[in-house]
Image (cartoon, rainbow, N blue to C red; front, side, top):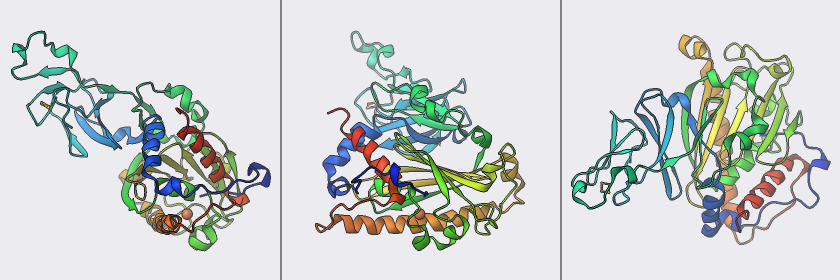
Length: 373
Ligand code: FES
Ligand SMILES: [Fe+2]
């Protein structure tokens, strides 16, 4: 959504991406291979999987993971591919296993740890050992209560990848926050348009007059301006306290925040599929999922302190309503962008000084896209 840009952070000649990056299925394929299946992607909140056997399925391109809480209480992710004849095992997005995972084709049955426990009639097959056919595991990591998974065969160490963010948001105690609301959106636009839109507030006065009245679009600063993590903060107008329908706190501010952080909203994009927005009294995050070159799915969740969610006496809906309206404005303009960029008449144009984070995103994106070539 941000920010005040200084001319020196905008590389000379920086311009929007070529049309191909928004319409070409071969590029989408490369994005799956080199970005989404080769990086840590946000897969939701740890609190979504509280009970042993509780699971959610994460689909990304050709790949699918069963993310679950095992009997010891650990988060695990298994490849959603039966080791017999390769059938996708779980179809439902979420659910609860009793103590095992059974393939619906011939009944091979796996423990929550992924070990093959039962394989009808396979004992008669010479040399067959159940231990040779567990569900293949997928690396999982947790940061601030967010779950990340990595479909790569050779994943980068999570702690190394996320080191620049460790400790950065500790005063928000995000780990302890719980979801108040999740809304799923379908956007008829390339996934990058959603991220690029989030990375600037040049559009705020025109598209979001209500938001511009809370955070003046020139008030703020980027504090992460290159690499996989981009963003910074915007200051509230003097008479405003937060991004809500009323412009005031919708519940008490988070208890450990320093004075400066009570006057700001922070926005970060976390490559490749997460957007994180930190307000004085709540945290909102989006995850973005490509669904073809000209479509994506976006999930948006609002996190609050547990006692706030439990008490129900606060105006938390004010935060949800405000951002739901703003989200829809952003998705709509992103859809119009997609339509315009699809035209053969589209051609790249220079970014403004207000769009330096987009230039930084594009640069990092292009580097990642070509990384393995
Ligand atoms: S494909 Fe899963 S049991 Fe046969
Ligand atoms: Fe916006």
